Structure formats: structure tokens, C-alpha cells
Image (tube, rainbow, N blue to C red; front, side, top):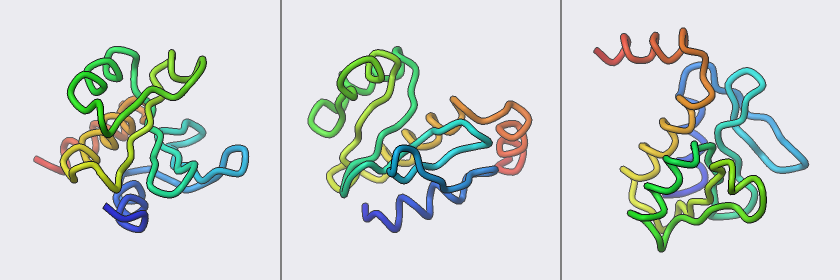
Length: 113
């Protein structure tokens, strides 16, 4: 997946805006970040620690916990140029749902039905 594709996918999620955090591009719903693009080819997603553990077990070559305390909280690097599209779509939607208000997430669910 290319950077332009991951940007477009993020911005297609309801309520998503592009911003920056410490000079790095991020994508958020309201003030809550669900994904950042800190460097070429790498996205960082907001997962719960349990979601992170599952992902690291199933995708060890493509994913890694962010170093330090942020990684302990579930923030996870995914090298999207090496990952399959399904992994990116699932990771992004999971991270988005982790921060999106329930009203927006419900609206997305009903729009897909």
C-alpha cells in the first residue's frame, strides 16, 4: 500500500481530520488520534494492549510495539508498504473505533448495512 492510499483510507472514515502531533502527520476523530505517519512506510495505530498482543502474534514481521510507554499502552507500528490491504483496513478501522465517539461508530455501522 502507498502513502496516498493509506491517507485516503483514513480520511474516508467518518469524522476523520488530518492534523499533526510533534511535527508528524496524524489522523484523528475530534481531538483523539487513531493513526500517525511518523516516517515513510510506517503507520502507528492506537490499539488496546490486548489488540496489540493479538496483532503482534499474528503479524510479527510487519508489526511491532512502539518503544517505551506508548507501546505499553497499545500504540503499534505497522509497515504498510509490506502489509496486506486486509491488515491495513482492519487495523485502521479498529484504531478508529478505539477513539471514535459511539454515535459516529454506530452511524458508520448503519451506513454499511
